[in-house]
Image (cartoon, rainbow, N blue to C red; front, top):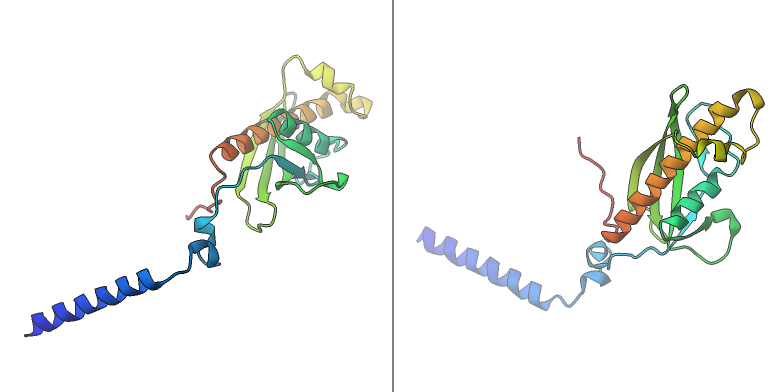
Length: 189
C-alpha cells in the first residue's frame, strides 16, 4: 500500500513537471536569468583601448604606450582606437595595466588586461601576457621615445618588453574571439 502510494505521488510530480515545462512559453532569451545561456556568441570587430596604467612601481616612459596596444590589436585584425579618440561605439573595450617589469639588461614586462563587451559589465576575457625585450629591433625603437640619455638603453628595453606583451595580448584576444568569447569564469580555489 505504501509503495503504491509513493509510486503514485512520484508519477503525479513528474506529470506536473512535464505539464509546466510544456506550458511555459517563455523563451530563455526573454528571461533575464536565462538570457546569458541563449545569447549568441559575440563577434568582436572593433576594440576601444582605455589608457594603459603603470602599476609596476617602476619608472616607465608611458608616451605612446596606448598607441602601441592599438597598433598590436590592429595587426591582429581588429579595428582599434583609443577610447579618448571618440567616434563610433566599439564592440568591446580593453583595460590594461603594466603590473611588473623585471630584469637588468634584458627586461620582462607583465601586463594584466580585461576585455569587456560593450553593454556588459563582466569581462569576457581577463588574463596576463608577458613579453621580453631583446633582438635586433631594439635600436629601431630607441629613437621613437624621449628618454633620459643616461637610461636610454634601459627604458628602450622596458618599452620593447611592453610592446612584446601587448603583441601576446592581441594574440590572446584574437584566439578567444575565434572561440566565440565565452563568458569569463573566475577560478575556484
